[in-house]
Image (cartoon, rainbow, N blue to C red; front, side, top):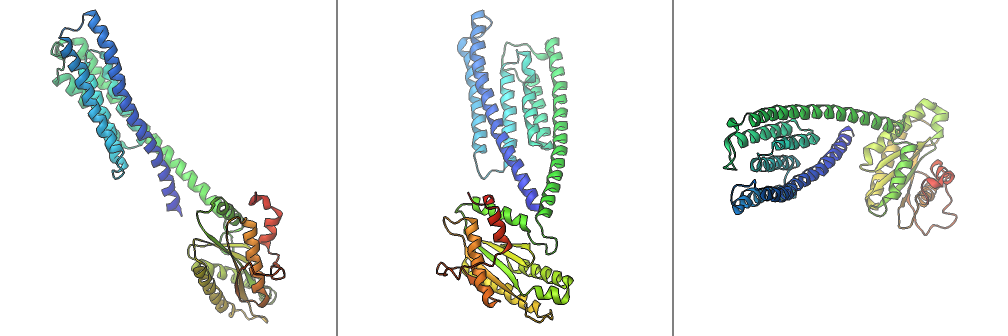
Length: 400
């Protein structure tokens, strides 16, 4: 159960990461489009001011066409990987993160004249912190810093620009940007650390809350689901609609009072606990409940009536063997009533039908009866079970 809950929580975390992954991709795409728009606007201003010293066709090719084409190719690659179902989520996150680094590299290389663009590499570093993966953030940080170094020291996209080693101010900005990116990388790793700590604390609290709720839904004597769990399950069954089929089994121990009166309540409790073990051992995927006293029930989901009857008969036969060990004047046995959930039926009707079937079994005891619409009015008298009485007293919990 703990593993199932932990798996469910991790699945929710994965869904959040998938949403962020798509947003991460959109940010990368938006950056390419923003760079294109700004290049058009700024390029026009530079052209009108006479700052552009190369032919306009060459400028458009270097500053607009080629960078945009390369960036769109990278974005297309990331989009292709992102929408491939067979690609693992971690591969997608690495691809989108590194593609954004490459896009930043292209934008910065083409526009090194703008000092502020040194810090564009901080964007891919910070965006990876959401994924909570140290290696991803570290790789993105190293890639961003290397991309900045390669662009400044080894590439001259604009042949008319001066070398960084000949420009003290530009060299100073470059060194400061390296230190700043290292700082951003450290901050990103610190964010991941504290997010992981917070996530683990949240998971621990969620597990504690889960165990507390489960303890409230467990019968102390038998370890079966109790009345609270039963009511919650019936409510879920109603909300389930017609996606699944259900069969409800109401169970009552015949002459159980003889054990308490003859052998004492300790023996009676032992009998109930052992019967609970029998139910757990044979019910399979069905949910077993102890509603109170010697009143039990089973809820089968997507089980054929034949399979359900076979399961109930195995339970009945094993309990008969168990009951023989209790020396009481009147034989103790088990009676069961089954009813199937049909269209338009309320949970109250389902339980009333199974109670009516149980009433038929109780007439001769040690029987299993399946509810039938052919029952006469006299046949449909009920055992006035605690389950049914509770539903009648609080029908609004289940019925509209």
